[in-house]
Length: 231
Image (cartoon, rainbow, N blue to C red):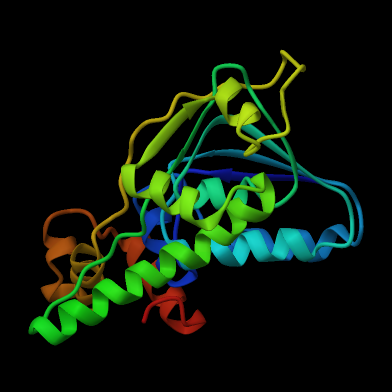
């Protein structure tokens, strides 16, 4: 079974927003049902992603690691950040023009210095947690990996193989190569603003007044509300 990890890796609850804007994205709910459906069949996972949400990436990584069948990872463009964690979930190859990147976890916080100190500790702990995936794959020490994460490390396909992050260079020259677009995640404050606008009455909705919320999309909004897709 073929599984695509393309675009930004996001939490399940944000998926409908990315779909609305027709942005490439993937969440655990996109992947886990396919893994369950495979029922021991070989999985071919194709990755071209700059990463995204660490916890969503970790959930996908864990599901692939726990799968009882064969898992083959194919990096067809770029495996960065949270996507590089997923890339460590099985035997892997990478297109000769591919790239691999890993770095520190990032996040946002607001509050006094106690909150900032606590947030810093959480981020450091998260760095150690995700470095475990790299340790298992490469055999490198936690210290070495944390130092390379701290510098934000980018490597070529050949270097990824030499350092043990990937098992081999892909031999199949028919693999589709996709250029990385550099698209960033939608900031949380933007997502919150969209949620508030979508929930507002249609006649007063700024999306409707701007022409973005058509009658068809209004019906889709109602459907999402009934399905619990809007928080």
